[in-house]
Image (cartoon, rainbow, N blue to C red; front, side, top):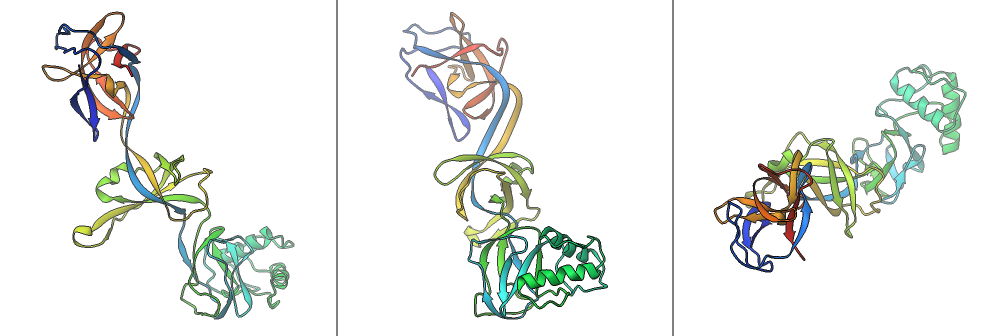
Length: 346
């Protein structure tokens, strides 16, 4: 009996010996011979999803360089891999800490009594979050703000000036994980040169996807990620780069699009830059009838059929569609959901 196997996502006919040697004709007749023992599978209706695996790496989101307005010899830096949160020290310059605060606006000027603007509000929000009360969070740097700043400076070992300059604070969007120290202890921090490379604390998978496969990546689409060790977790595409990047030259030249995948609260360990495998959806057929691929029979006259197992054994020609997840889309007259079809017995 000729059953079908799949190679590289394409159905091909292969002669597989299953018990007796039966040959099917399009009219449903079977040549004489012992019937092969069968197991059965059900014709089911649902979404059929085909996937493709690509390589990625497990890392952290939001990689960026950090600058500071402080100038002088670096006297302390965190270890690579360390996490720094609000109110904590990013590094120390000339013995004075540079403090991380949260916000989307860079620290570009000295804030003092009489200053106003959204950067003032940003500073006051952080002071309030760090427990320094007695001030109104608005866009005005008042005497109450000055008093809170002096209290904060005292706790941080800074001169109690009541003013905050770019050498004392760095604003970033949230807690960060140190990836690289660019200004180690003993080196001079210079304005305009990065001192650290940091990332966010959320785990993501990054894929440099071949540009000719960019249709596989749609923002919001679900994916499956295989982690080092073989465990799998679910993820969702959170970002698809809008600009392709070309690397290498000659035959080694590659054009890729960056894709980021969020992993939610999945347990992924602490390894950074670890290789992973990502299963992307390449095609989805919704609400179709399908059978296991091994249920297909190659007809002597060409085309395919399935062997209906409803008490008697008869052949039903079918039209083959998409493949996915070990199943194949089928359609044809007389085919219905719930029908049992034959598959090779183990």
